[in-house]
Length: 261
Image 1 (cartoon, helix red, strand yellow):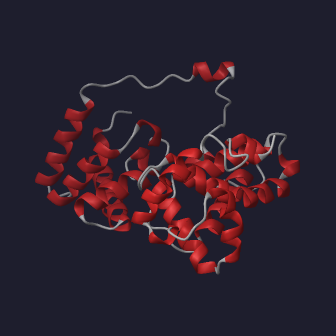
Image 2 (image 1 turned 90 degrees about the vertical axis):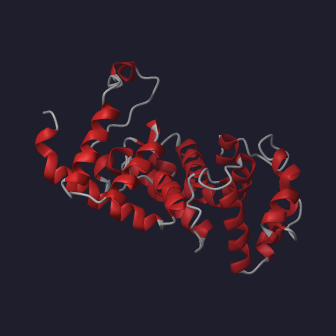
């Protein structure tokens, strides 16, 4: 099966793309760069006729609309993925011998990249998305070394394997939130962290999700959380990450003896 088939984006009339055609005018009111774009059947050809910069602006607009950190419009994400399918097919062809399910791997990674695209991305967005897809798939099939320390410690499992059932979720501890609150209060009193850093960590904790716990300091400093908290506190994503990392390191260095073995 092809990459397009795996995504359910075989053509402009695909179920995922129909809402995009219906919502295009609404999107264009927020992103004028989409005003002159033709209906989806002619979008590929129209994009090829543009200079690099206007093409990138269209991709940025669809990316911000479709990213879960942006407008979270699934139809816009589908439209962007559909535009990138030719490039994704090229990626899959280049890795054809690496896995019998290379189309599935490329398709799923393309969708992940589109849906998690940082809303601050502005430079060569399409090329960077496809480069990220290629790098991630090469890592997953074992061609490229794993540089991320968390991934390096992971073992990939098919969720349908019997071994998957042996992986138990940690029990919920109803006292964990209270313990964290007391620790942060003590840290502020001891001047280990500032009151501002304490508020930052509390905000990050509120935004951290179950699905993020494998990355970014146990899910505390993830892209989703730092972007959301940065918007709330009027800080850049980088400032949030740096301050949170500094605060967490200070807490770990000062209160390591309080962590149960």
